[in-house]
Length: 269
Image (cartoon, rainbow, N blue to C red; front, side, top):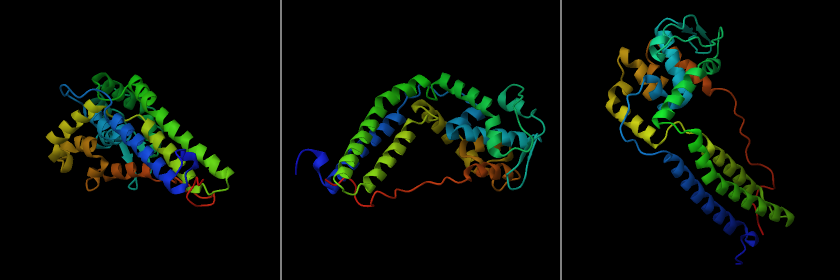
């Protein structure tokens, strides 16, 4: 067998491509999980800060919605498809100041999430100051270190696709792998919610509040939602909050498959 991989047959080339891809992405996601230094000392975090660390912006939305409904400031239809906010006063104790968020009448859960963006941004900024959430500079540094290898991998595969197509060999499977590589690169480049120290802080809170996160009392529901998600509300009087949260999972996604290209094991030489 020649040393030139572009002259290899499908089996050896695909094995080589998959091995390189595994190395690149295992290294990349490992590096992503290590963004930022380890925690030196855990800081006191608010419910909203814990919610962001545990579940990102959507978890903050769930916590805000629970705060409003428990304070009689909002109502939700049983199916969770419509949210009506009538009074923002209950948010003052949660946020630490009076708020005037741009809530629309009869919102969907997604519209509600958009309206609480100012709270999300404020929480994210505070966590960045603590070193618990990656900053723009940290993400730029990470992407500059890792993404060039993903690009090279895609270019390597595309070159083989063009050579295989010119030689009238099936390239469908390799094209599928290229799409998967590009998607994995997109996921790798996404902004994570936590740095390494943020993960340490969250683990500490989850360990010290394990019972409340798993089987909360009424006054612990907000903390439980922050740590475990709205699913803890499923058998409570606030089940509509969970129903509303679940509506954000609905909606078509229409992922397209890897058809065409003659099917076969792509990139034959």
